Length: 198
Image (cartoon, rainbow, N blue to C red; front, side, top):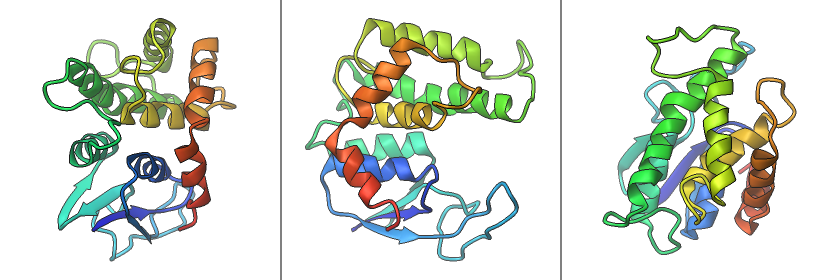
């Protein structure tokens, strides 16, 4: 059994999309989390060590953190080829983009949102403008973030870019806009939205 611990309209929403892309049966367990406005609370039914989402449990194995969940699920369920298999030449770029999302892009967005200047030379990430320049250049050279084939990495990136589309936090580019439209036009995205509330 595969279970997603989920709070609607949160980072776990993108994993509804990934699970729909994988085409495997899964269940959703709704949990509460602490929100930035001070509402919410830790949920004793949530196996995440800090009470956050996303977290999955698959046959007794608990996996948390978005990049790790992407790598785990695409390895565990390779049928629909949503992630390159071990030995595939695209595996390196795929893993690099998953790690870049977690280690560089998301911290860059959080830093800008919190109005915290990124310390040059000491932080493991860069500011949003520098990160997005790199992403935009990559998307100008290929159809998807890690190559010419849609992957779970695209779910991480395009879902975040869609979230920030109307925010001054994210620089706007034609490449990123076209990329988000392409990714979110997939049927699995619509199916995931229909399951957003469980």
